[in-house]
Length: 178
Image (cartoon, rainbow, N blue to C red; front, side, top):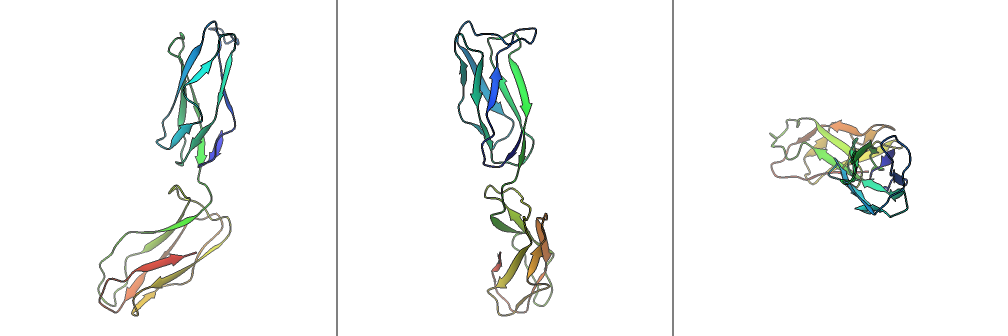
């Protein structure tokens, strides 16, 4: 499945099968543990149980990290105890901005190294702009200036770059606002 970070998957069903791949009925309660390779992954209910006389159990999966985690269902009582499924997790909508690199030491009148403004979702994943984003830049220094302002992050993109120059000594704060 393809998921959006923070949004539960559609229902995933674990089905009990015999050694020939046929759906089987549990002769006793089956306990299934669920794991994910993602540190941001979680399950709506774990462990799962397939009750006596039944053959399925359902769950949903939620992940906050962008990537392709593998989820694993394990029933240690079976001859083939493990089954895996890969998920694809995409970023949620952009909800915050970050600046990188962090703090720089500048010489008055000399431009900074390139500073990048990045769109992120609420989980810290890099997100793409759904529409063009206009980013305004400000500094607490009266001697501060930007190579280009406002910045634009185009539809489908995640970043914009600029440099900063300051003619005043001090520790100004740069703010990027969408």
